[in-house]
Length: 402
Image (cartoon, rainbow, N blue to C red; front, side, top):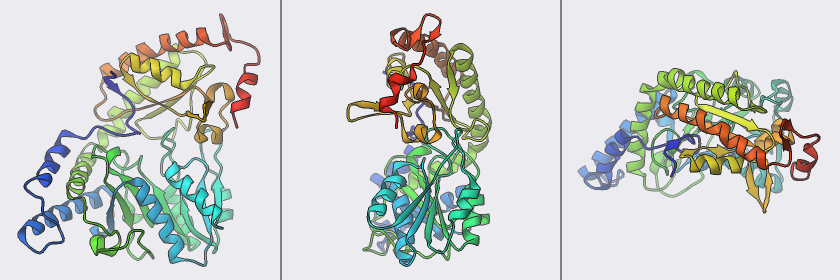
């Protein structure tokens, strides 16, 4: 069983203080916040406090801009579909080739329904071209949806500048900030971002709770209709325990923000330097100069990421791969393909994502464990010889790449 957890971009450990805060709302504080009696009122006050804590973390102007949802995916869908319903005359969407499936899958579906979806391409470091973006902005675009940070590489996008350009063009702007919230400072009240998605389980709250930030004055159509909850913007009895948990997690995230940008970043850099110094034919993917402080994605050439992960897991280390097994054949992730990572490396990407719970000792243990694992797998690879890679190994990879 893995005891070193470096997969925090997938999900995080719920902070014990968050668990403590939410537990009473399963037992003593069980009232419906919409009820007029004292049971409901006490829960309603707790939800208001949590809403204000999230507002503070996001730097929002007012707590009414915080809409609680079930997850990041719901928030993404609500934002995009709302923009389309509120502006039926606009039939175009702008996004990127490296978005999370929560956005890309929805956009692909909308394309089959007659909408035009523009997917901005990225360069070899996962960066966007703002010149191309400017060209696409028009009165026909209903919404721009661009992630703040890529979940695989950690590469940051200039969403505040993109939002400003969208606003100047009269276009709504949404960002999936699931990976950024709690790791980097956000000041929404001084930005042009109209909508933002976050997910509690990425910042040490439980799964099943998310937020859609909705700037005041933004035209909006709810995804879920029914009761009056969330000011009529998201029907359904509130997940009181989850909301309280997220409020507490937001407070803790704000308190640990400097730790993320200093201690966690230093541990990430130590891990990167340690691996690259001891493993040949390995390199960092994404933009190493502009990324999340906790994220490291390394491509190990001539071997498969899944094999590395299995051996890491046996060594007690949990990480994740940028590639996935699809229909029985290994295929690199859409992010690696979009960046044009070479065939020989795109199959062997591993993402290490740290948290405030990551320790120096754990990083040292991972640095010691990775080189022998990679060496073991390369001995089994027909594309790696006694003195390094054999000639023209890319031919064997080409059939399953793009």
